[in-house]
Image 1 (cartoon, rainbow, N blue to C red):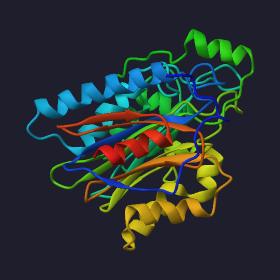
Image 2 (image 1 turned 90 degrees about the vertical axis):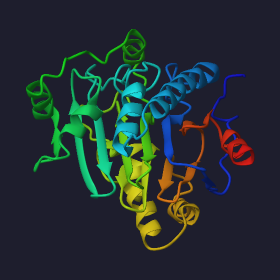
Image 3 (image 1 turned 60 degrees about the vertical axis):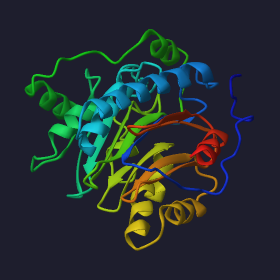
Image 4 (image 1 turned 45 degrees about the horizontal axis):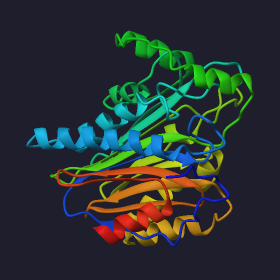
Length: 316
């Protein structure tokens, strides 16, 4: 497979959903090009190899447990994504203008419609874990130094997210556009969960808050779950995740909800993965590539482009 440059990346057709035959999960590794190490290109083989490895690991977990909750599925996948330095979350997160990695994440359980998040967290490669620990707290969104201090109070082992590749990018003052990971899941009891994690845009103003720790980028309710990726400010402007799920709650299909939520913003750069309570899934972006994986007990599938998503629909 050749490297895919942005001008060559196929455009995404009209949003189309597919139905899974059983509960499971969908995950993504961010919108590109510009988000894999290298910035100017998507390194297709390596990205797909990493996605496949994570998909296989999660399928083994699903098979090993007679019952696994939506929260366990989503957070387990998120941790694996955060541990892959090729992606811009956790280990290998991009650096802000002052050369520091500051991470953001949000988690949300749909059955309680309850969200928690952290932003600008430092010295930690699993911000998703820290966000999840806040779900049962009264104060559920923390930022900056105090978020890091809270993580320290949990006894979390601190580890620098910085890698040599990201330091080289920072030295070249390479500002990215996007790059996020996330997972949405549905369990046997019909419960939905969404989680999203990011290292930000890269070389941005220190202290910038991304969409990933807000309901615009990560949202779940009793009807569905959505995780977004792309230019954070574009996602915030459109309130993307909430827009999709509000339409779903109002009675539209997942496909129609996605179509209407994207229709007003053709020139924005963002994408999403979505899953509803009837096991319908959707993967869509305005442009570029969007690495994704789909996992159930009986199938796995990974892809990178709109054509890959179409192939999944034809195959299943």
